[in-house]
Length: 123
View 1 (cartoon, rainbow, N blue to C red):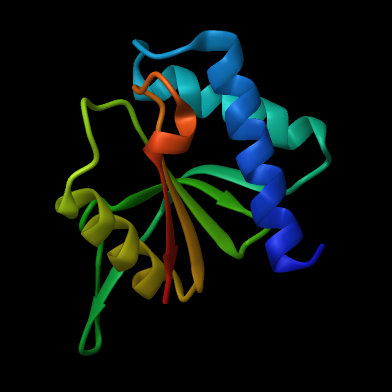
View 2 (cartoon, rainbow, N blue to C red; view 1 turned 90 degrees about the vertical axis):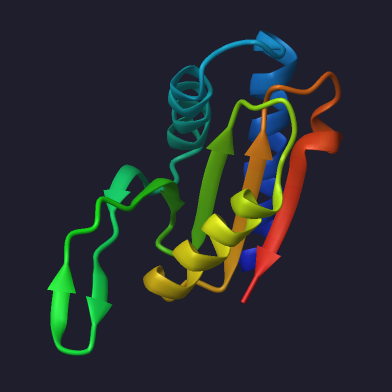
């Protein structure tokens, strides 16, 4: 699937989840539901994928985890916070760099209208 079509599919599934559940739940609930929606479409999705940090020649297990990695090319970071902050964008950009992915989606489900909780990240 073309990267932009895949991105749109993830967005559509995010809107489905938000429409069904609304704001106010934990990140883990949204993650499970979005994972379910994407898997139902036959997409390859990894939950909580470990992301090692390589410093010089040393591989460090620093505890970084990608919420959802879709088709090995799009990083999805899920939030359920009052509002997205610069640190959230910095986090997904770091995950893109470490995973060598080029496209990321930051989704804050704790908003009245999901369009206000979406940020696209590109490296």
